[in-house]
Length: 385
Image (tube, rainbow, N blue to C red):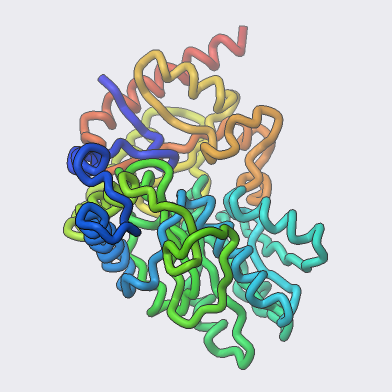
């Protein structure tokens, strides 16, 4: 039996996604910018995929720009805003627990003279609205806050942030990294007051290497990649048609079944957590007690290194993570999220992220908890020796 509990890193593409991608490579191989029939045929398919992504965000198709993934979407949102508003100020507000595709951009901008304020978090991974208010000044040009933290699943109060920013006379651009919430929660950037929102296909059973940036109509942004006029000139380069069509197929599925999928994942997480807490001693749940995403569960196992447990579980075909897949291969570094939550070194070292999908079967709970329990007990015995 296999239990894949690393769906925050990547998800298995669905059959219809694979089918349309294969067709795009064999039948729909025209360039969507070409004027002939083959090109027009593909252009229509790309437009339909754009409509599906827009529908999922209650947005207009022209507000969706396809990118090579979430990292590029975040980079485009931040650097494109900085370029467009370079004469309006040099202050940016973000949080200490953003994804590396956000934090590393801000480190670069600090070296170029920008003032970046990193909001603190509490022990649950939540920012302080009061701290945000205290740091909003006339020269703040961008506020960038993730919706769901990719390591512990805490949901940030982006609706409240949106209301605060709307009330300002000089309003900074509001960017939200929604890569972990997309497909697991309903979100309307227009309703919340979000100007830029990043999403990725491989988190929702779509292909890797494709994502999108929602750009609210009228938002100031400039391109960071130059070439032809693709994606209204904001993101030049021949479109990744197989990826875009696969993305569209994945989104189409959850547009129809999102509420059903959310409820299933939520039930799965709660049952898994309950069983784990019942059967495994000396563990703790990391993250917010009420404001959490339905698919992420972060657990610290006392007395065990998370990385060792991760590899130990592989023998049973159980796949988990020790944190963000984009930085977990850096063996010398601890999770910046858990450190900022003020966890002990032991709890940080012993943390495992379980992340679920509606494709997980309920029987995987029994199998997974049984093997985790025996593995933890075996490893603790080995350490005692």
